[in-house]
Length: 226
Image (tube, rainbow, N blue to C red; front, side):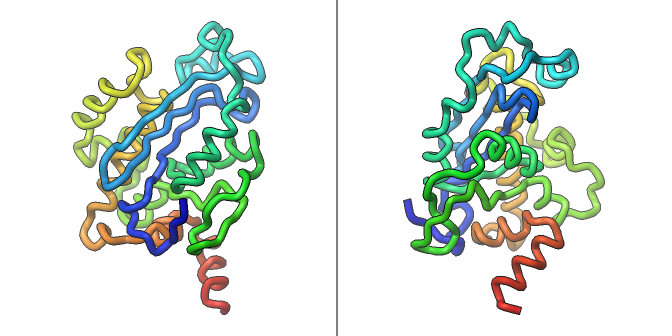
């Protein structure tokens, strides 16, 4: 699929991603919500085997234990799926540096995928859109940018509960469950982009606003050859 950064954000599939796991265990659960035309177009979730035994702290965080992972394939077996996602759209996450790191620890780069420059291919998982950084940049006085806090602030709990009942496994309908968190991130992104003056933002603008300030300045200098 060919696409360009000038595409309006709602006209390109945005794959909202959440991982449970760590650099020690690898990804043991993923959730993916594809937003397209401002709607939840599709969802996917899967539990995977771990690289190392889970600690009590791991289980306290995400609610999964070693028994849940018995006979599950490793995340590394999902290469084709993740490359296919990136070939059709851009990844989104809440605090995207975490998901980006876990993905790159598994596979440093994908095969050729579209960049935001029309007709140009690249071998990068990014650029990422970060719903947390967008909220911090666009709504700088909130103070608390956790998923649960933003869902409450934007009065999205009812929508989240309804989507979770439809898409999430029965025991995974709460925070720190991958698909539930991905659904929350998707609702937050959609709400942020519905704000005044933001409905027509391009994918490139969202990616640019998702960068940290130093990285954003470097990118702007490169773009304008300063």
